Image (tube, rainbow, N blue to C red; front, side):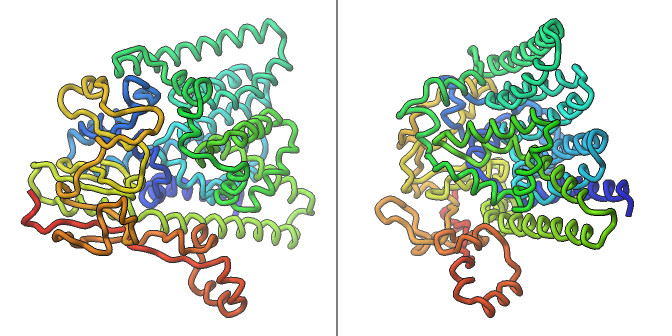
Length: 555
């Protein structure tokens, strides 16, 4: 098969994966995505949703401008079609996946033009079997969108580094400006090495002219975003500045990111091992010796160096450099294979072996994520089918306690259902509710009660159990002193309605939690190395269930 035929086949597979497979099967990996982005989007589209302190006008550190493109897509669908509300969720994911495909397609084309078609095809393979990209590219997060926009920035960076084109340098910065101003200002750091490269290779007059052009683009973008957020919040709202001020400038022991948890320095290396096949990481470490692209590799190392020093670490903070890792790996793989004579059996064997290992490890991780962590999506989606043909009112209260952070989003709830939190062992600040009366601007501009930026518990966010119509929880022992709902000893007429398998992390081994192993392989390992295998592999599941009250008790 020719390289062009391989390219077409890979791009078709990439399209199907990004637009259908990922939106349908991928997990929601972070409650920040749910409560800081899906819930406000649900408010824009359907008029209700949970509200975090970040969206209080008092703090305004989340951008409404970031959500407007998705609102523009969903509003006509929701208004003029009879699709159930959960389709809004999957359509948004499909749009994100399609945007990812477009960005990757353009970079593939640029790699083929600037470097080699074989490198471009290898890059697509590494992207396809990249577990981190599988869920990140359909996540409604500024860091995930920044990851996609930086792919386009990389496309123009490659063209600039190969031709010296000032217009491509400017376009690269423009994409990064957009990513930073829409909600994640830290990605500006990724453009610093490229700016230094431009400064080293151009005369001062040319540099000043280009700096003026870039400053104009930055200013216009910032003005548009700040103006939009100011209109929504009803006050001056430079969201990117507010994020920087809270997380860096004004961070203290009482406020700032560290109050939400800290991790050791090796958190990110371990996270990369989970999100990339091992051969890709090894090759990526070698690819940086392709010095013609040193500004890109400098961006990669600068990003890792900055974030590995921060006490508060999260997987999504590394999203923007995912594309650079696979690019470096694909270059190294191409150069390694070039040491062998053309079409030798050894060369073909090495190529096939490496790609097979990448595919198997990548798929093993992806399948594990889908099998182990998507039960909340499956369970909450049951509520739509239960509401078929039902009345629109009165309101139905869907409650949860200790599992509050696994709630997917309100798009999976029928129009007359609302999520409520009951007392549990969680002692931090739970999300509240956006006001539902009045115009959209009144809902957004109203300062909610009981909010703070110190993660201090507020009892006003909790709901009495006896006013719940449904309850979602894992079937596992509770803390009798803190949790008010016990799924192991149902009382007051509660009964189990629907369940899905969810990973029992405490009783599963590390490999069982992280990777899927086919049963026949598991049986072989149990036979050959039973003691050693049982020490590292074992996967156990618990039921993640939807409970309901008897029909007569529901209002």
